[in-house]
Length: 127
Ligand code: FES
Figure 1 (cartoon, rainbow, N blue to C red):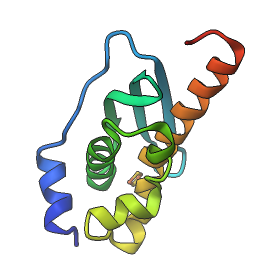
Figure 2 (figure 1 turned 135 degrees about the vertical axis):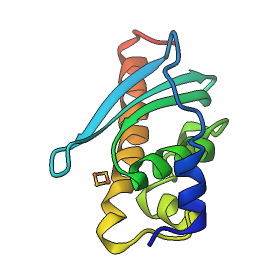
Figure 3 (figure 1 turned 120 degrees about the vertical axis):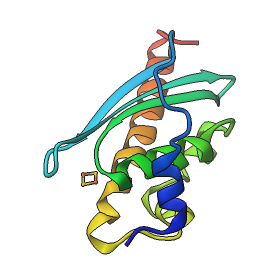
């Protein structure tokens, strides 16, 4: 059973869409279930100024993406990296055991996007 928080985010997912000129765009999928997440971030002064995503997946994947987007919005990149799988699942009041892996998509996309951004900064291709 899903918690009320999961159902609320599933029924009213926040920050859905794609940022027009994102700083970073990442796609991540789970081959075991076929679910897929496309996440775009606008990063300004080492903070997440905006985040939007498109998710193709189960109810838990939608809810975890939605709450994760709210949790990292406006945060510094270091603080956003603390929003991991467990933090996301806990914020939703927990997930059923067979749905715990669904929070991997959002957490993995956030980590992947920040890593991409930091690599690009090191290469000098992004300010
Ligand atoms: Fe694949 Fe939920 S079943 S992310």
